[in-house]
Length: 212
Ligand SMILES: Nc1ncnc2c1ncn2[C@@H]1O[C@H](COP(=O)(O)OP(=O)(O)OP(=O)(O)O)[C@@H](O)[C@H]1O
Ligand SMILES: O=P(O)(O)OC[C@H]1O[C@H](OP(=O)(O)OP(=O)(O)O)[C@H](O)[C@@H]1O
Image 1 (cartoon, rainbow, N blue to C red):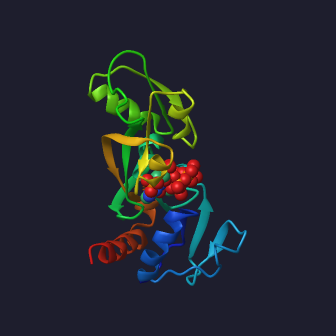
Image 2: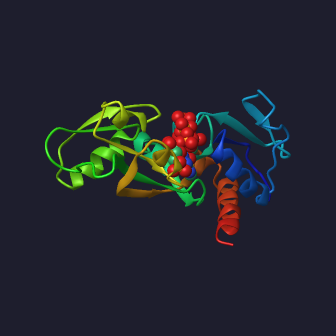
């Protein structure tokens, strides 16, 4: 495909980068640097007009919102917490799939008074319990949520579950489904207008590989 406008794509190291690279390859974009060995944060690709910036997963919507990157790939969980201001979300890339779940000790109560929930996903957790009419106290954490019920910090957690191995290793179980999660292509609203041809061509090419 032709790249009429220069574009910057924001990706997070780890599963998003690993799962996004084959999709970009289909669109004719390949990294020149090896992200596993390079310490560079701005990576060149085989197309001079296309750069990739490597940032924390939770920072991807912020870079794209402010136009520091034209587009990016972000988990739906992260997008909900960010709020989605200044972003379009044109494509479900169907990668990094998992579920947001309420989890805790086997048989833990899911209702009643003074229910304490530890989570990194404050907005999603609030929405979930509000929809059930359940009052909760949310404790914001930035990782290792599984520890919270083990040390009495919370009754329950709201966390991502894929294989269930992390919960199991800590004697916890999934108790209630919150939502399915996958990663989305996000596009800066101004870039969407200013670089429309290039971005639409990229979206179409990615949609082609996802839909087979
Ligand atoms: N076990 C998992 N299986 C599948 N997808 C997952 C899993 N854990 C997280 N994800 C998805 O992948 C995205 C990126 O996860 P990653 O672990 O790279 O970053 P993070 O630790 O959530 O964010 P940050 O590093 O910014 O705190 C998440 O936002 C989520 O959508
Ligand atoms: O059900 P499982 O297959 O065990 O996956 C779930 C785990 O994966 C994620 O953590 P991750 O491995 O990304 O670690 P991090 O978020 O702390 O980087 C998530 O926060 C869970 O802890």
